[in-house]
Image 1 (tube, each protein chain N blue to C red):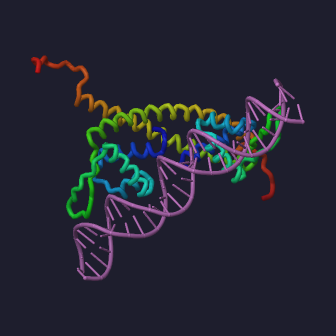
Image 2: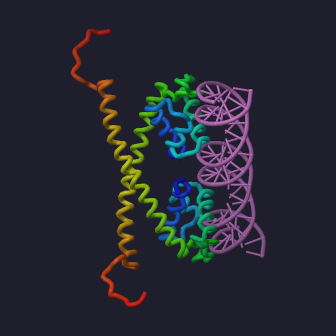
Length: 125
Length: 125
DNA sequence: CAGTACCGTTCAAACCCTGAACAACCAAAA
DNA sequence: TTTTGGTTGTTCAGGGTTTGAACGGTACTG
């Protein structure tokens, strides 16, 4: 649980929990990845038994599935989300510390190349 | 600039800026990735002209390179770092919001499955 | 019927990482 | 010197992941 693919799967679970009727293309757009990648990750979720594809064609749609979370999918979503947030929170704290360091570094850089200090006017262009 | 590989490259730049004498194996350990991956990303940096491998063998070492940032590497390091932090900061804010949402969701879940509320005693099933 | 539009699925190519092996080099021991 | 051993960068097969483009199926419309 550290790769980009894991992140995609978690976001898929969270998306589908609220919108089971979403199309693979709509999911792809919402996730900002390609259709193929979405299909790939969705398939992994289905194979693991976390998601089930109900083949009900709603209203006038053609061949639409509803990707429903199974009970196992619901509990896994919760578990993975908790782990994800814990990890992200640590990461965020690290980022905050890093930003402080960077501010200091940039402060020194600013001395090297001042932004808009009180400069004596130089004539010409 | 969104993949894991990009992150590795940035961390490489920041590591080498302060420690140009580090070995590929030491870099790998510091980054928590394999030697092959380190070599792969380092090669990308060299090909882009952001890092130059100085072949100076220090003291009693065998075949040590020093991986020095080029001027272009220095400015790129700054630019990429800025972009990275901006992106991460947005992500961190999103995570904080998400955590708030989760707290609320978990609160509702608690209602669904009460932990230890004052329940009227029901005679045993 | 043909045309259009949307759906899921598939596939080659590329990218990235791992783990393990390899080849070069140098220092100290035999 | 020769050999041994440790440290270096490099390469490679294999597997996982993503993209982009295609494909075939199904329904609505004319």
